[in-house]
Length: 336
Image (cartoon, rainbow, N blue to C red):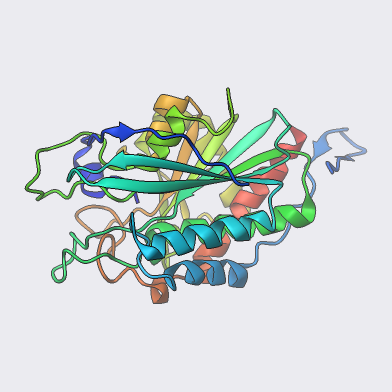
């Protein structure tokens, strides 16, 4: 998840971006109500939580997906090859950036598109890397975490959404983006000089170097820590500030589907996550579906940035609630 400790204090951290050239690889149904002649959206496909869970586990099986690691390279190849089975086009956007600690970090944003020629587009996104340090743990603080919920859960949901879209092929443009190097942010107790914008390096790069010229989506939805048992998602302040209508629409859709116990209508303090830069730099209205915990000082999930963020914490019911909501949002949008 993006700026964890930073999110708590609402302070942005900064990173020096060393932009390199990107390396590229890579039916609408309407039913009329005879009584009121309103156009009804076609039914959304059924989200398969078992399939989504398998996609989450496949990522964690590589080990921590941290910058410049073998696990990062192998997982990037797997994500690209998997999405090529479903999407019309897949672009791997390679970039370099510098971390808060001065290290040169090699990253890959993976962008998969359905109906890439259509102007009416929606963007779905999540980060796929994991935290290089367990700075919120009491032990092994300098070792990387698995990031099953913080990273892999959102990606696992979006891969299953992509699989469903490959079957239904809706008459709508959809872009699914997996951002890299989101979680290499400066820890609160770092001995390095404070740097702004040290989190969300992949989304910052993408927002400044869009994968296609003049790319624009009508709105975006970000997923972050969306797979834990009894997950709760409030309407956080950054989403409300920049994308209030989008936020309301997503939460209403979830409620209509019976997922109101997950998607709470309470408004909570703003955080800095990938959606902040998408809104600020790319100027695409983007909301954030992210776990809010009432019982922790940080208000993040209790295993946030610890070694407890493992695959056994992932709940298929939570994956289903988020994934089915996303599919319904997309299929409701077909009447746009």
